[in-house]
Length: 317
Image 1 (cartoon, helix red, strand yellow):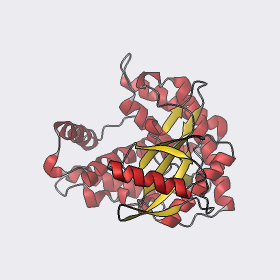
Image 2 (image 1 turned 120 degrees about the vertical axis):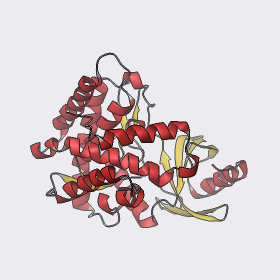
Image 3 (image 1 turned 30 degrees about the horizontal axis):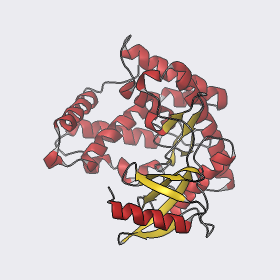
């Protein structure tokens, strides 16, 4: 996290760059800052996680979605008419994007009911419709296909001795790479639509945030992630989890189909893409957690994933 000196310096840089009067910049994560201004609330993303060209393409994409009427945070132009600005902060070269905040809050777990999930499905359906339109107008040059992103290099991060998991990981990757791609089933999508990246306002209107991991993938992946996320994080008892998972999937898919076509053969692959997300999460633990200093909670989570993947246990029937 930044120290106070860095935060003060960041505020000064942003105020010089953008046509707003920012009063505060509070870190939310290492790279996201919640900024209050006389003109409202903004979020500044300060990162070099992706190149200038990738970030610019991503922001053009999200601004296009916003113009089409999807509830996503629009990025605002700097005084130099740039959507992505190069800055120097504490001797580091970084890229900044300033977003106008969208309305809504993170919904408490127990409020993720069928109605909200169906609405989420509708919004994802609209997202993919608009994505196809965007790609027709702006062929995507810099945003990667999913398999070219480092986070999917599972065999690089999952230890050699975990042979059963490595076999599953390899199997999932090669099966998905062999699926036939076409314009109706594959294209630009959000890529990380777990429930934390969905905001809900008092009128039950949903906003989708944090497109930083947008990628080209099979559209069904954008459905697999929130279904997986709802089963994994929002089941709070009251019935059994298998039925809950089925209800979640049905709600999201029903909503989606009201807004967009979902090829039947892709729907059959939903469990495969949920498995991709599971192996992805497990591989990320190896990629980012310090093996020498794992907490008890981290060990518990890793073992939970290991057992589920090794036993080839499916979250969805």
